[in-house]
Length: 119
Image 1 (tube, rainbow, N blue to C red):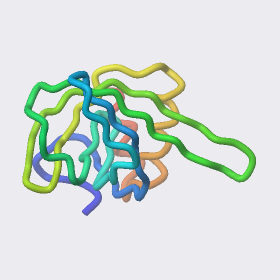
Image 2 (cartoon, helix red, strand yellow; image 1 turned 90 degrees about the horizontal axis):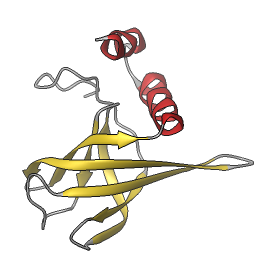
Image 3 (cartoon, one colour; image 1 turned 45 degrees about the horizontal axis):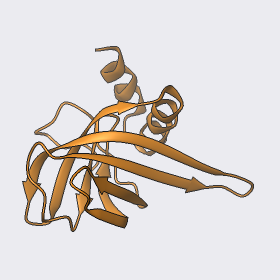
């Protein structure tokens, strides 16, 4: 499902992994992503965190001639049996630009992404 009806932001299925480090010291290298939006991500398999915990995420994408890493600060907003939902609280402009493009090019309705960003 590309869009979750409970949330206003379009979420896309994007098969990759992210390195996650929580401020309390726990690290989860190569953590699977269930879905992704311009404002957050659902991380599969993380269980020992609580709502409000802060983390740093590094999502690296490799192309044929280069590697791009997005660095994002987040906060756990929900905890479920299968993982945690993280809201993005801070990222640099380049990371936001690339994240927006990932979501845009994987969305069923890309024009809706632009509307969300304007809001």
